[in-house]
Image (cartoon, rainbow, N blue to C red; front, side, top):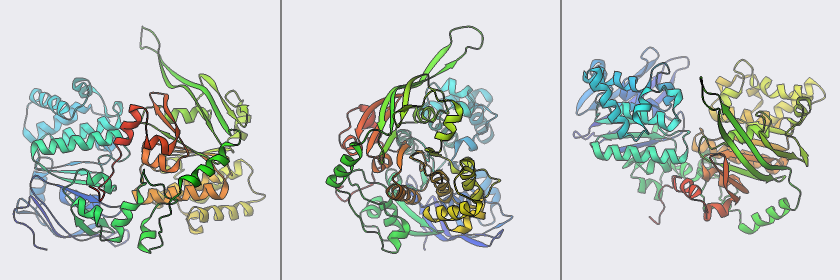
Length: 567
């Protein structure tokens, strides 16, 4: 490929090979250019080579077990191979990077303002006073509320969106010519994600810098990029304008990425996955409104399985010395019903009270007032021994499968443990047979039983979490943000799996997410939560088509839509 000599950045036949523990070609002859004042989007699943490409450009790869071939030029001058000093001089000043997880990228022991000051003093040689003034100006530029307060706070005292804004301020502090944003909105609320995207576009337009925006969400990338590169298994399989990629995708993998995201105006029985698109086994089947209505009529003729009445959970904060005790209502007089065989979707931004509501339902938090009826029985005041027996009926799939699995236990032991505790299975042999059957049901084979959590991918760990939840044959399963941090295609696999298990076993789901498109696809009934209260409740499709509250409208408006042929 001939590289344009006017390009700001040229990546020429870049290949990366891991030499240990197992030799593996991770990047294979990557070729692309970034023009001045342009935004390039790189999209693909985890393991496709997106972040590896970014780390290669930044010169952050560990040379002890990695071999890199090819070339990288910045402003026409070679920075790879054999120019490590030049790369170090460019890093942070001419080429800056926003990392995926701001909590791990920021120093937890230093105040946010001091971390940006340090960058300015090191790279621009500013005095401490001038650095502080510049930092406050940057915090204002990235639209942080009350910059002086944020300046003095530690990272753990900020929300995810605020931490990401601090990272953006640090990245643009030296006015770089190229900014690399590596998954800067992963696991953020859709409204916060939209704000971050708008902020990056605004900064790019104002400073005329170039940008490489990396994500696994093709629809999101299309909202910011002038050109999109689609990566799969270490190769660029397709490139083009957002319009060309969306309207006329050429590669089967690109088609799968587009089809895997739930479409709000079209309810499919199952979502496309990379495998089903590649082997041409995917046939879109639309669930008609009549079929859905018939199903609902059957569900809602019964008595509710779970009924929540005026449930409230308040937290009290004692003053340090004097003053009044402060009360915060995380859940404020919430009422709703869950019917057997139904999926109830619960959506809202971080901090709205979704997880606290679920913890209160499960008696992991004690209710301040109100009642929860399970099969007509009030369970809010049950003694602990009775709750232990009830936990078999109500299970939860956690947001982060890695932290919810014991890293010292094999996958088999993680799934067997609750079965042993609740006396499921006549013998150890019987439980082992059940374990193997469960693994097959969630799309894993028997060999996974002897593996440890760190040996599995994110999607595989989430399948283990599902297997552990269904091992006890529960009546209700709570899915707490269980797909929020997964790739789009892996997310489609997990959503399909949950729906298949629901059809096969008659499970009832409470499905929690901040992504309204995913919740709407999964749900029969939809609950929209804001500041501890339910602001809207009703049929999922009706709310999505005609939202009544302004808050729901803002959640729907923040969903990345991609580009349609009509546009």
